[in-house]
Structure formats: structure tokens, C-alpha cells
Image: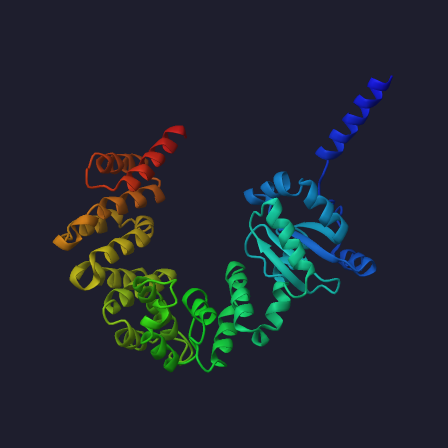
Length: 396
């Protein structure tokens, strides 16, 4: 009898461990959720999902069934799940800025968004997210409300979260934050903010200051000369598109070119035509996009071999959709590789391989991949990636 009781107890323990899960309310109305949260004085955890979302299913299977997660969320939150494409989900998606799945949203009993996570989050990180959501000093939307009052280190932490959460307001907030600083590169936190997160600098004098501060930034010890040059290009193009430069609804391309010529003269030609190509493609103005792209391909000395490869890789799949890929690949192949670029001559074939994968031209990919594998000049790390891709295709 004692052995049977022990076995039964063991069975019950095993069952309870396996049954760990977050307890979500069953089909609640949003009004009833808010009422319950107010009555119990608890934050609401909203899992904003879509039925087709793979990471959402992964959260259900792996994270929500973790014992520590279940215990903490069940004790501290009103937990609800809403399909963002059905019923009240569409209203909630609009109210809480849901644009990716899963959106893991923490909401006050008054319906105010406090904190958020996006995408699959493993159990340990999900617990940390919950604890941040309960801490007013760590809640993202509380930080956002007080962003301009934060010190530099606190704002840098806020900036990291803002970019991760794809907060569209961050560009304006960071611009205002920097505008209030007597020296936008005054300490390492401000340098990190500008090098990694700030979308645009407040005034042209700030862009001028940044452009002449390469040595100061490199001395921080985190950034190379290439990092600085890349960031300068990004800040220059963003400033050229800002309200400081663009005074009408139509893009003033000459103003963009003027800023690029002034601050990044060595790469201005390529950046300007790349931007025009991208802009016109996004606006479905194919002929004007191709005119700009032809400028890049027709002027390899001005554009640079590696930059041309980057452009071809980016725009190749779109050219495929337009039925023009083969024509432009012929043009791309005809571009001579200068002696100084000999070590990266393999990039031409690599670009084609990437395009063929993206456009699902499997046989063409296999052909170019095998050619690269047989070439002694192809770097080993590239060969490793090609072998993995070929193996994956074989498995499928």
C-alpha cells in the first residue's frame, strides 16, 4: 500500500510539473479585462499573436510552459491572448502599435501601455521582461514619457529599447534630447548614442561637428575608422532628408546631393544614386529607378567595385520580379575588377549566388556555388556557407 501511495504521489508531482503554464483568460472582452485588472490592481499581460505566426507557437510550447514563468505571470498579471486579425484584436493592434508578432505587451489597469517585447523570448529573458514591466524605473513607456529628463546613460538604455521595439517616435525624441546638449559628443554615452541609435542630428552645425570629430570618436576605443565613415554616411543622408533640408512634400534631390557632396564626397556619387534607386523602387517608379541604377553600373570608377556588388545584391531580387535580372547581370558581369580589388573578385559570383537563393533559382544557385567551391580564391568561410546551403537544399 505504501509503495502505491508513493507512486501515486510521484505521478501527481510529475503531472503538476508538466502542467505548468500561464493561465490566460478564456475569450474575455477587453472591457472585462480592464475591469478585472482594476479590481485586482494588476498589470495586464497581452500576448498579441497571429494564427500563422511560428514564433507565437514557439512561445506557447516553450516559454509559457516554463514553471518559473508560469508561477510569476500567474501571480503578478492578468494574462490574456488576442488574435490580432480577429474580433477585438484589430482594435488592440491599432491602439498598442502592433506591427510584428508576437507582441508581448504590458498594460496598466487604465489601459496605458507600460512595456513591451517583440518576437520569441526564451524563459529567462521573459521573466526579466516581466520584472522590468513591474518596475516603474525600467518600464519602457514610462522611460519614454520622461525621456528628455533622463541622464545620458539612462537615455542610452532607453535608445537601445526604442530601436529594438521599432518605436517610430524615437527619431524625434533623440533629436530633441541631443538638441539640448551643449556638446553632442560630450561623453562616451553620447558617442554611443550617435554611433548606434540616433537617426538624425538636430542641426547642420551638429553634422559638421560630427564630421570633424573622427579622432575623438575613435579614441573612445569602440569604433574603427570604417565605423565612423559608415555612420557619417548614414547621418548625412538622414539629415539631407530631414525637415532642416526638405522644405516641400516633394523630395529635393539636389539638396540631398549637395549635403552628400559636402560631407561624404568620396562616396557621394554611389550613395546618391543608390538612394534614388531605392526611393523610386519603393514608389513603383521603375524607369527612374533603373536610370539611377544604370548610373552606378555605368560608372564603376566612381561607384567602387564592392559598392556595386552591394547594390546588385540589394536590387537583384527586385530586378528579377521586373523580368530584367538577366540583362543587368550581364552588365554586372562585364564590369572589370581592378587589380586592387583582386582579393574580393569572388564577390561577383557570391552576389549572383545570393540573388539566386532569394529568387529561388535553385539550379542556377547550385551551378554558381559549385564553381565557387572549386575556386581556390573563394574564402573558406564563404565555402562553408555555400556547402551548408547546398546541404540544406538537398535535405529539402
